[in-house]
Image 1 (cartoon, rainbow, N blue to C red):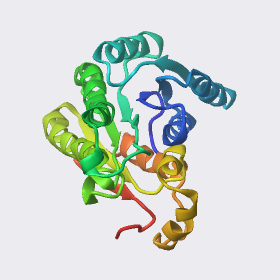
Image 2 (cartoon, rainbow, N blue to C red; image 1 turned 180 degrees about the vertical axis):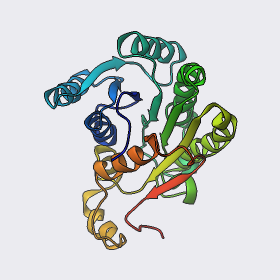
Image 3 (cartoon, rainbow, N blue to C red; image 1 turned 45 degrees about the vertical axis):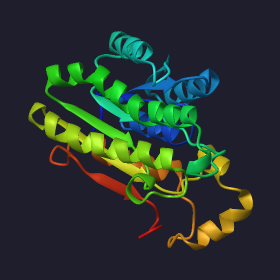
Image 4 (cartoon, helix red, strand yellow; image 1 turned 180 degrees about the horizontal axis):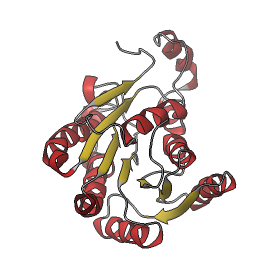
Length: 251
């Protein structure tokens, strides 16, 4: 069992899909969970209600992860409400279902992808680090993608943003190690979420399944288990690592 009991976990993009599963799993293991959302307040409140119904502690917090002021205000509110956050799961991210090749990519679409997927991680990290440094303990887990390792097929801006997350976390792991803070990455591939279905035509799913050795799409719970592994108190000698969760896809 992962030891996260008594810790305060902030999950960005924690209201839907992978983020929802991560929030529920952390709460189930005893963490107090701050469920961040941008627009989907109802979904965030449903996650909080589910956690509380099971005896856990959770609150919903609104912030756009690409907005520094909102992120800083959110983290301050988490500290006041639940306590100083010492686990960060930087999960919030977007894809681009309209991507039609690098030659058609608009600058504003590039900028938005980088702002949400990469800058959003940096802003969340910057906001929580003072609490972790003061405590001399922390767990930072970022959700990237195998596209950040292989390039993938979801667009150059998506691959660049996720590759940037991996590089950021590897550098950050070195900076933070002496403070008892570990920094790791979970890199999913082909997880059954709204994001996957928004960029993958349904008629392509059978062909996709044929390329996954375990024979199914990943589930949000598969990613949540990997996050718990890195977030645990026992994982104090694991840092700067990238854990691919892909069912063997691309291996």
